Image (cartoon, rainbow, N blue to C red; front, side, top):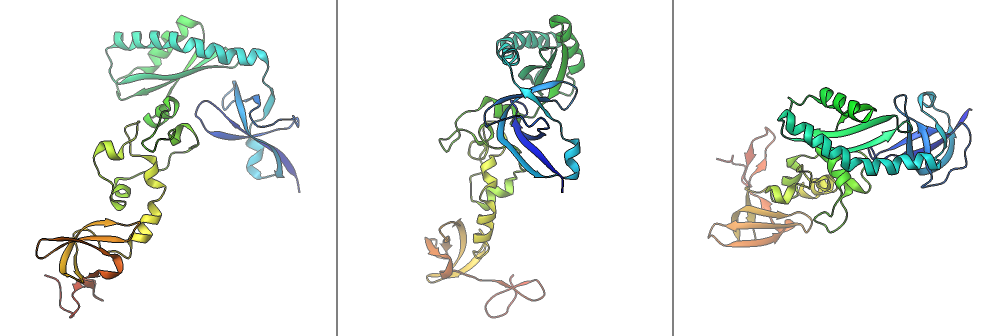
Length: 289
């Protein structure tokens, strides 16, 4: 059985970890800077995230790019140059956007690759009228570089900006998330989270990624509890569910006398249970009005 040595490398953009072959068996360790074959023709500088490991060769491994060498001083100088160049490019970019009278377009980041011969520009845009090709040509002419304009989403832009989440920790997207999973408003509803934008939206303006972390647990625990708005029978009389605390298994009920009481889930019974034909019935077998 053939084997191959694989190393995992992370890049500033798109902030993900990719696998590369290590055909030269370079001695690499975590956090080493390396030059790798890019996904186009350029070479890129990345950081080793997982040191080389040998595994059985897979069919798709033949298509993996390779680690070229350790990053040298000259390679790192280009990274530093990117940092210095970023503020200058941002000013020029904003000038050209104003000249084109387009709104909702921002420069997110840029980096020099292929030993400084190519400039990759990451931008976000809410406008379909933005002529990114024209802007790319203007940048290329001004700086004498090949300019590659790449559109990124608002979540990727937030990943770069970083910040502190409402939990008090660094945002997940800027620390450990490599791929964004779909998040829906139903997840917030299932967890009883307020649907006000300031409660469910993150810094990117999209739904909080953390709403998806415990959603399956909420669904599983909530399956045994009556839904909000349903008629129920409690030790203190009939009423309707007004609120659920799924994690604690508690049900808030507005009784027929207008009072509100909190009961354990096991103390509350659904007033109308499903019948074999799919319709609802009460404990006496009569259908719900």
